[in-house]
Every structure is written in C-alpha cells, then in structure tokens.
Image 1 (tube, rainbow, N blue to C red):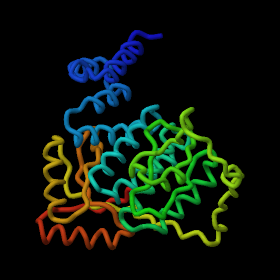
Image 2 (image 1 turned 180 degrees about the horizontal axis):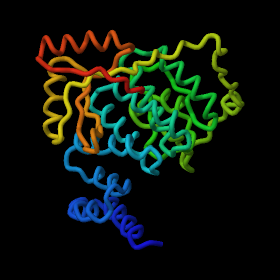
Image 3 (image 1 turned 135 degrees about the vertical axis):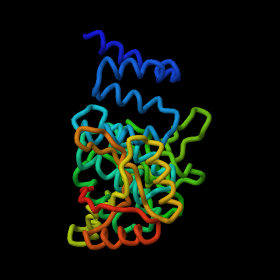
Length: 298
C-alpha cells in the first residue's frame, strides 16, 4: 500500500476520533503534495469550520470528480445540509441525483428517506409517491413502505445504513421519534408472551398501484441564472445571502473559466429559457445584477 494511502487512512481515523484540528492543520501540506486529489478535497470538506464552505467543497468534488469513491458521500452531505437548513426544494433536487447516478451507494436508503421528506415538506405529495413507486421497482431490497397517516416527518435511516427496516410499522407506534427509524423491540424474559394468532399470521403485501396510476414525474428545470462569479468564496456567499434575503433561491456552484476555479452565484431553477430570462430581467431591475442564463441539467 502506498505511503500516501496509509496517511489518508490515518487521517480518516483521526476525524472519526474527533481530532479535527489536527487534520485541518495538515490539509495545506496535502493540497500542495497531492494537487487535485479527490481524497484530499474530501478530507478538507470534512474538517471545514463553516458548513457553507464545506458544501462548496463537496460541490467541487461532485462536479470535477464524478468517479470519485467519495462523490456519493458528497451528494448525501450536501442534501443533508440543505434539508437541515429547511431548503427543501434544493435538498430534494440534490438528493435525487444519488439514486440516479450512484444506485449502488451505501447511502441510498437514507438519501431517499430525506428526499421523500423534502418533497412532502413543500407539499409535493404526488411527486413523493411517484418517486416511492419508481424506487420500489428499482431497489426492491430497500424499504420504501412509508406511513403517510402521521403529520410528522417520515422516519429516516442513518447514512450508510442499507439494511431494510420495518419503517412503516415503527412510525405507527405511539411515541415513535419523528426523524429516526424505530427498531423492532424485542421481548424480554420479564414480559409476558402475547397470545394472538392473528398477530402471528403473515400480513399481505401491499402492492403499489399499477403504473398507469402513477403521478407524472416532476418536470425538469434545467436552467439557472448566473449573477456573478468570484475568486473568493466569502464574496460569493455574501451575494447568495443578499439574494436569499430578497426572496430568491440561490446557491454557490463551482465553475472553471479559462483554467481558473471560480465560485459562481446562481439563482435556481427554471423550466425553460424564457422563465430564466424573465427572472434575470427582474434581478437586473430590482438588484442591479447583470445576469447570464445557463443550461445546467439537474
């Protein structure tokens, strides 16, 4: 095993132990020693002190190193960040990329759980049901038998947990936590056995509706409006904050222009160029921003 590979293993172990400052101190040296290395980029994101900066680094990894073994981890972390911030539309779009591009990811169950929760949070119930049926057909070994009877968020599994679990049954139990899966409770020796023949009978499998009853997939929104590109991340983040305060859905997206890495500020997303142009004109009128309409498929 190469020495540098062993060094990376040690650094991941340090992060697991919570020694973030020690790893953070080594990042500049590693960047210089292994320029453009996806493992170093991922490590640097893991130890960022600010979540916003970590997200930008994860997006850089996703865009520039799609074949990296850490690309699916990066998508999951970006989606979780957006979900935690309450940016459910952005979260659902980001999370949807993982099943599409990395169907064998160990994070598949958790990511889909969060994607469905994100869609429900913005009232996209039909889209959520469409994805559930689609994922159920593609990934039969996973558990997408969600319980929609509760007003609480659906349960979700930890990242990396690929084992199917009785999610819908867990959510139906009184006192179930709203945001975590509920494991089956085993009977202890001090508890009396419950005699109930019907309870022990196998329950019929709930079949999904036939394909013709599926809700149509949400329409694609491949256009964004770019209003700036900065060499410094802080400047890009400040512009995003200003846009969000004005009611726009904006994000920082890493781009490369003439070999130079920049941080683009983009207002997202629009179904066609005409919609994007209208939004750009409004941005120009309201905030004085010059703009560029770009096709950036989801």
